[in-house]
Structures are given as structure tokens and as C-alpha cells.
Image (cartoon, rainbow, N blue to C red; front, side, top):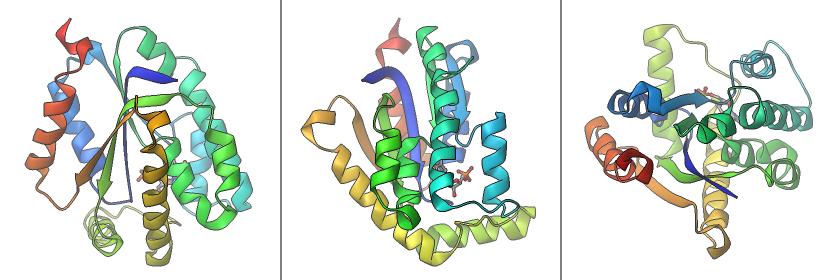
Length: 212
Ligand code: TMP
């Protein structure tokens, strides 16, 4: 099932999805949009943030279950994705289950993340930000130096390289005809912030919900 007003941004750490979501948010009327992210800021997501910072160590399978549990609240919980789509809003999420398929596959295999996530609704648009893992990780490191932001457990070159390859497989899988109602838009994340924003806006502004 595809949620017609749901948009997802995906990509390796440091590819610039959050910056682009902020720019898109500025273009949209606040009462018509709902901007969100995974892991969420709900209790389930707070657990995951601690795990990402290395404060809690869990088995990789537990992490896969936790990301899916957090997502279940995000999709179906109060003031979640489905509720906001039903209210007629454009819902934009920084990451969704494609992150689980890419990130969790390297340490617990492809099958479990897929089984846990295959029944979640699909977004109408999936913007997939691509850049070589070396470059995106460099951005993460530079940002950390400038802002003091902590480096997270997946922000290592070997993990980012494996995740990059896994993401390509995930995008190939969802490019199949049976998922064609969802549009995957590949974004060259090495382009300028403004160029990327223009490309994204040219697509989003044509959504029927913005014409009504
Ligand atoms: P971010 O808030 O900077 O996007 O970081 C979230 C981190 O969590 C990022 O390294 C990707 C990771 N992650 C997963 O491993 N699986 C998931 O399902 C999600 C949503 C995020």
C-alpha cells in the first residue's frame, strides 16, 4: 500500500537529507505539512538514540526489532504518519524502513529486517541521496569537529561501505514493477544544496495535495 502524501528521504549519514528537508519545510505551509524522522523522539526512539551513541549495547537482531517497533509507533501511533496523512498533510520523514534494510542487513542478514518491515506502507516518493561513503563520512567528521556532535556507532568507513552496497540492492529491489506506484528519485548528493533543493521542489510542488 502506498500513502499518497508521504515522502521519505534516505541515504548514508552525511548525505544532506536533513538540510534538504529543512529547505522543503520552508516552502510548505506549516498547517499542510508534518515533518518527522526516524529514530523518533518517542520512548522507543530514545532507546535507539542511546544505542547509536554506544550507551547501550544490544544484539544486532534486537536492534532490528527495536527499529521496527519504533517505526510501528511512528506509522500507526498517535500523531503518527498515517494519522497525519489522513488529516490531508504532506508527511516528510528523514529515514524510514529502507534504512533498516540497508543498515541492519550488514550484521543480522537481509531476511530479518525484510520480514519485520515488509508490511509497512510505502511512501509516494522516495528521495535516495547518493555519494561515495568516503565523502559522506568526511562530512560527518567535519560536522562533528565543528559542532561537537558525537560520532555514532555506524559512522565508520567499513560499515558505511557495506551500507552503501546494501542501499543499492534495496533500491534495485524496490524499482521492480510491483512497487512502481512508489517513485524512487536518485539524488546526486555531491551537487550543491541549491541544485538539489530545486530538483526536489520541482517534484513536490506537482503533488495533487498542493494544488487543492
Ligand atoms: P540520523 O539521525 O543522523 O539520520 O542517524 C540515525 C542513524 O540510525 C543512522 O546511522 C542510520 C541508523 N538507522 C538504522 O540503522 N536503522 C534504521 O531503521 C534507522 C531509521 C536508522
